[in-house]
Amino acid sequence: MTNNREVKKQSEMAEKFYGLKYDIVFKKFFVENSDLLKQFISDMLDIPFEEIGEVTVENPDLIPDEVDGKYSRLDIRANISNSIINIEMQSTNKEDYKERVLFYWARIYNDELKKGNTYDKVRRCICINILNFKMFDCKEYHSSFSVREDKRNELLTDRMHLHFFELPKVSTKPDTADSVQLWLQLFKAKRKGDFDMLKETNVAEIQKGIDVIYLLNEDEKIREQARQREIAEINYRSDISNAENKGRETGRVEGKEEKAVEIALNLLKLKTMSVETIASVSGLSIEKIQELTEKI
Image (tube, rainbow, N blue to C red; front, side, top):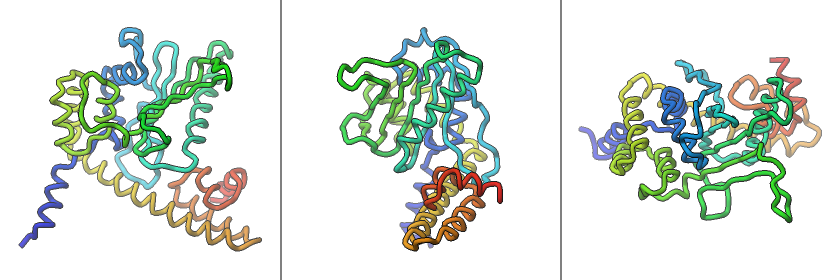
C-alpha cells in the first residue's frame, strides 16, 4: 500500500512545472517567441517597446538532446538597434560571479571590435543577470552599474551597463502596475499554482508567456530533458564540492604541486568546469591549467 509520504511525493512531481530557470525552457521560450523577448527587454531596461525595433538572437542554438555532463552558461545574446544585450539566468552563487560578469561583458565588447568596428562605432553592451540568490546587502531586487567618476558621478561611457535582478527579494504577490516584478515572478514560479496566480493578472505578455510554458511542459521530451539536466546540475555541484575538498587537502601540503596537477587533470577529464573554476579549486594558475588541457 502506498503511504501518505509517497502519495505526497507523487503529487508534487505531477504538479511540478519546469519554468524559465531550466535551460531548455529558457532557450525555447525566448528564441521561439521574439515578441516575448522584445517585451521582456523593453520592460526590464525601461525602453519604449516601439523604440526597440527588430530583435535578433546571436546564439539561437537550442540545448542538445543528450545530456553529456557538460554544463554551459544559460544565456541569450540579443541585438536591438544600437545595443547588444546578454541575458543570463544564474541559479547558484559563486564567489567570483561578479568578476565573471565583468569578463562576459568584456568578451562581448571585444567581439564588437572584432567585427571591424572602430571604438566610436561599438554598440552599448548591456548584461541582464537574473539571480536565484541574494548578491547585494540591500532590500532592492534590482541593482544597476555603469562606469562613473567616484566623486562627481559623471558617466565615463554609456557602452557598459550591468543589471542584476535578485529573485529571492521579489514579492510573491503579483502587482499589475510593476511589469519588471511580474517578469521576475514568472522566472521564480515553479509550480502550476504559481503560474495560475500570475495568469490571473490578465497582463497580456505574462499570460502568453505562461501559455508557452504550459505547452513546453506538455512535451514529454522537454520534461525529460529538464529532469535530466536537473540531475546533471546536482551532480555538477557535487563534483565542485568534492573538488574543493580535495583542493583544500592539497593546499595543506606545501611543495606538493604534483598533487594539484593531478586534481586539475582529473577535473579537466570531467569536462564540467571552466578553466577559471579549476584554477581556483586546484590553486594553479589559469596559464598552467590551459597548458594541462593539451595533455587531455
